Every structure is written in C-alpha cells, then in structure tokens.
Amino acid sequence: MSAREIHGEIADEFDWSYSTVRTVLERMFDKGLIAKYPVDGVNIYEAEVGKVAILGRMIADFSKRVMELDSAPAAAFFSDSKLLSEDELTELEAMLRDGEKKS
Image (tube, rainbow, N blue to C red; front, side):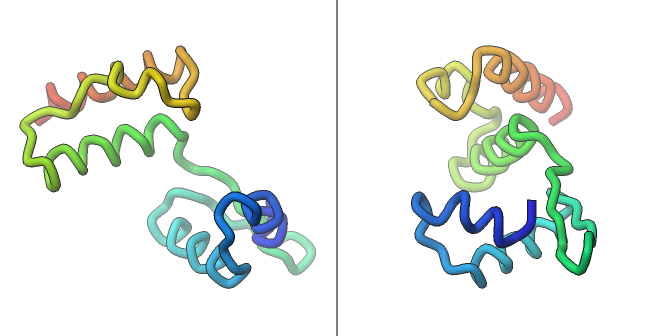
C-alpha cells in the first residue's frame, strides 16, 4: 500500500496526521521491517517481517530490558488478544521458547 492508503486505513483508529504515518513508515523501512518500492512515482510499502516475529522480538526485548526478566512470559499470556489467531499464538510460543534456549 502507499502511505496515503495506509493513512486512510488507520486514520480513524490512530488519529495520526499523514506526515506522522510517513515518518513511521520511513523509520520502519530504516529498521528493515518493511520494504519500499517506487511504482508510478509513489512509494509502495510491504511487510518484510511478520506480525508474530515482530511481537516475539518486542516481548523478548521488553522482558529483558524493562522487566529485567531472564525469560519472556509464555505466549498464553496473550491468549485473549484479538491480534493473534490460535496458530499465531502457537508460533509465538515456539519463538519465545526458542529465544530462551539461545540466551
């Protein structure tokens, strides 16, 4: 999607200006989270990293840096989330478990 299309999709929920959306997209691009392709003079953005991978990274980082935990909480903690399907919860659980093994 273009930045304009993304802004249109999230405007009601986030109440962000178009320039804020563009700034966030550029930061995400710089971090390798999304790809950017010029098409007919407009940049099109596409996910490079999946939702579960992003959540896993964020949970592990927050658990270590902020909560000072040796391990991330179990994915079951997120079972009531509307953001994740059962399959995604299973994937997240495996990712968090694997991350503990690597630490």
